[in-house]
Image 1 (spheres, helix red, strand yellow):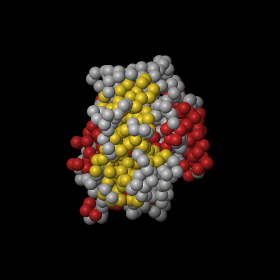
Image 2 (cartoon, one colour; image 1 turned 90 degrees about the vertical axis):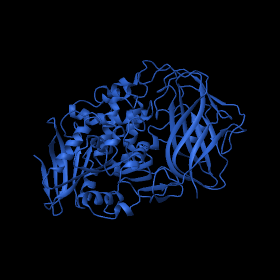
Image 3 (cartoon, helix red, strand yellow; image 1 turned 120 degrees about the horizontal axis):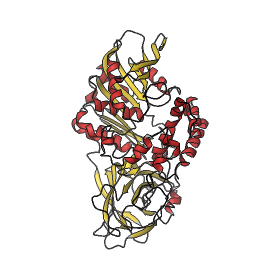
Image 4 (tube, helix red, strand yellow; image 1 turned 180 degrees about the vertical axis):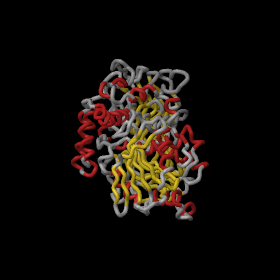
Length: 577
């Protein structure tokens, strides 16, 4: 029986068991105004602990604005029946939850969905199923596509630190549900800290991060990695995710909203962070739907996935994306689409709001990418020191390094320094397997806003290897701040094997940014072949470490070309100022 609390303002019903089409019941909390309604509904579906109080806090804030708010645990999680498996059941369960909400006596029949990360994925999953009463979405910091920018950072390249640490996190509740000891005690202890409110206590949060880092790193050396013992029973999907490295595989397409874009005709409030590890998919969703679908709105701020700002020049007053106050952009979006308020919203509200780092200002725009962009090539040069300039190269010798997978370039557990484990970019610049290209100190500031791409001419002594690229802002005092990055796996998705020693042209997406390189700063580009454990290591053997039964690796001779016939170049989206 549901626990019902009646206050002067809200009716709160906890532990309501909502049936799905297969009879499985999902634990659900409902927060709604005390009056009879009807009220538009905002639904959040997620697999994380309801005991930390965060979702309940936001739900009550939203409910006081005249909404019925539903917070539902995914199947197999925190009191919901059934077995948990990421994303796949959320298509049908999302449909059923929306239609159940629309049928309640206090519901107006207009249902929106809201939430970040997994709660964003679950929105896109529901949209695939097209429930008739789903009216609007607000997916925050999540992707809609599985071909890249999610478990796979780029085609064929597993976002290893993210995939391992997230799967480790999810074992804790499953161990409790089955009544078995946790194979990852650090994650279990971190889960208890989360229940105790660690996100609001810096010391507790630091300890949670330390514990989860320790447990994740303990799994990295297992071969084959797909069979890592700590995940085998409680997170079996990790093996499935490793086995499906092609984003066009039916395994991913059935839950990829990008593959169903033609069927999604909803207003969507897209919110992304420049340093979020799902940013590319977030921006691609907006770009795709804004071409043909009305009602798209995009907000991109200076955040990583933990809502934090990581730059030393960050403005701590930039605001948080988890703002659900009455005048917050997302609540104005819902007021218009779910309540029919703000009749001039579509005309007056800017379709795009961007935070321009460096200048540390919010700016309203009409499109993404910006129509006034000047796509400016910065060519790689050898010269006396490796350079980066708008001057096209002439006759230059290639640069060379040896990539030894047994000694990879260190990387953070996840991109965007989410786990507060940043890499010393000054130290990596001194490694013999990292090529550093840099401009002189800029005479005037340069704004770079939009997608950043590297056209790289390179060869390798092996058929299948990786090339990584990272754009960096170097401050006058030498502080090196990462801006955006990318990776390509040369043997993935090719019809013919690469011929060792032969130069090929690779297009590497470094995703997107909006940052102003100030006068006196340098623009730096680092090229290498690894960033571990951010990305899964390419052993250069033709195997993947997820499937290789040994830790065998092969060093590779890598060459980067920058001559008249093979002009490697970084293409920056420069905005005139």
